[in-house]
Picture 1 (tube, rainbow, N blue to C red):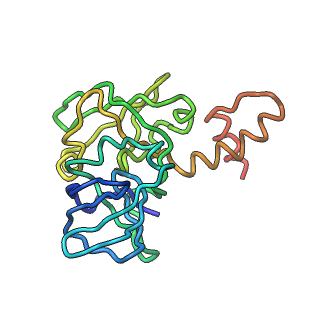
Picture 2 (tube, helix red, strand yellow):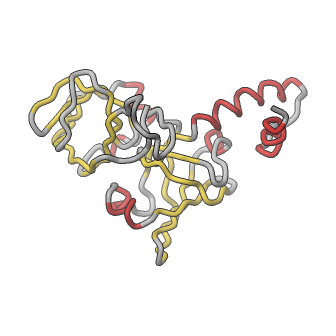
Length: 207
């Protein structure tokens, strides 16, 4: 598990034969889980100032592999004693999003990101979402995309500063939104009705 708070922007040293090597100030242990651009990977080798993780075929099929170069976001797995300052992030990528719009504002930057509709149903206004491993809050949800605001300190300390329109990003929707949708949609599908987040709110109010 992770919190979505990036601990370091590290640099990719190499990616060869499914092994990704990162130059970093962080020293892990063998087998440690580390999220790289939001992807949970296990350390298979390490040394002073670097570590290597293996990227499995299943992972390569669902993440934006082209971003495993240059600078990357890294976050070591959280400990049970840690404070959860972002939100619970699993490091399991649900979808690849595409940045459709970047709007600069005095208090930061607005990003509009398009994602597949099968994942968009788990994105709710004011809910949590992880973009390349960064815990963020959703502002608005549209038919095929969502919008969020990035504050200057987040831009400065993550790879978001490198984002451009058209870039693909790793998306992990909120774990609890997925669980709730799955639990309640199963019941609703039996009555052939369509589940909405208003219906979920109503159901939760009964408990």
